[in-house]
Length: 205
Image (cartoon, rainbow, N blue to C red; front, side, top):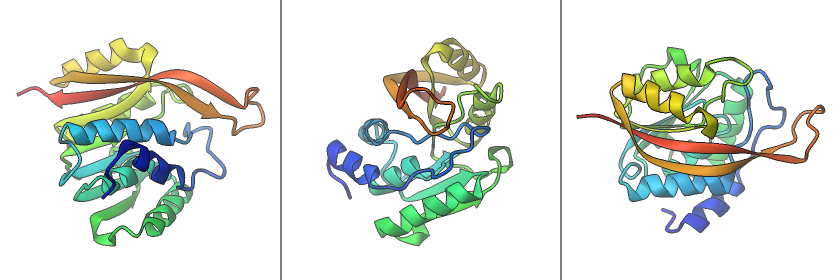
């Protein structure tokens, strides 16, 4: 098991990412340093080791794989994109993690129904498909009592309102300048940074 945040970031940086990102699905690689930071904090809060975790919209698997590296008992990796899941599977095989500790699901998040101790997700921000992030949050609230979810910082009021309506409270926030690398011909900058917050949401008792 990895014993430091920097070691986790290095391990995650070695994973393969999207070769041809799907614009419609808002696919973009999660930065390894940011993923490591959130996962390490989640681990310190007791939300990783020994837990069953669902990585919704897992893409190539960085969050779910990071959770496994930190001692998650089981991880469900869910994505609608077969090609992304193939890369995730390849990444999992490269880590040597026991296959019994993870399961891949090629289906829409709306069709996934397995309960988990924790959901960790980096959903579409809703810039291409309006309210795409809402769909992910609603499913997460259905599946678990503990959620870690990335959203554009400008949508904080929305995230807090929808979590409140679902019976959850935001307990922690981590803000990042999220790097979006140029993956399409029309992207003008090599790297564009956007303000993103990871929210930790817990069901109220």
